Image (tube, rainbow, N blue to C red; front, top):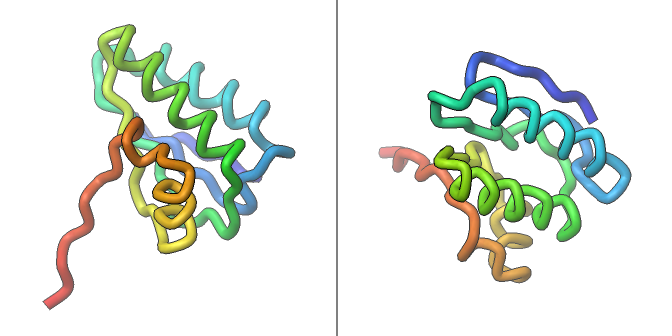
Length: 103
């Protein structure tokens, strides 16, 4: 898992699964702390695989961000990520950025 910060956006690359949750958790919470006055985005467009444990981490981080007065949005959720969000019902907890329709 590669984690890059680009302003208030945190970009994740690679497999986002149980093996990378500790590393991603630390990065997400540190990023929320640094960007207290900005909307934080977690960009998943370069995530090749995801599991429910990883998505639960993002759901918990979203709830914590809301409690702390922050806003956390998921960007670039491909079909596999969206499918897992729906199957796990975590789509109810996280905010997924809408993608512009392609004409």
